[in-house]
Image 1 (cartoon, helix red, strand yellow):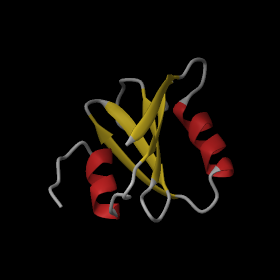
Image 2 (cartoon, helix red, strand yellow):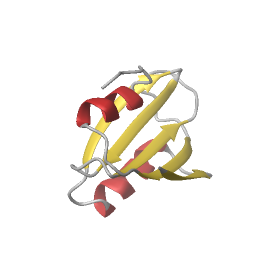
Image 3 (cartoon, rainbow, N blue to C red):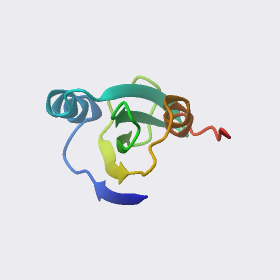
Image 4 (cartoon, rainbow, N blue to C red):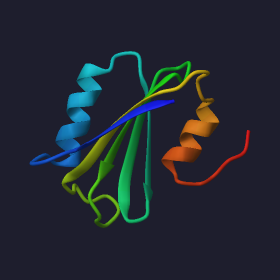
Length: 94
């Protein structure tokens, strides 16, 4: 696995997600709220490329500042079930 983590400054979660919605055609998306943060994950259907967008701590449904974006490349790819498990921060064994 290769991954790159980036802190995000001066951007709300909704604006960050709107940008990725426009720039990641063909990617699937899943949303969760865990550990007091929103977590949105974009992924290629084959599970080989994943983009995580994490919000700053806040209440569920709140449009907080975006906290980070992480890009990951996996070989072999993860299953949809595994990606959703990561997004929800609930460990799932294959």
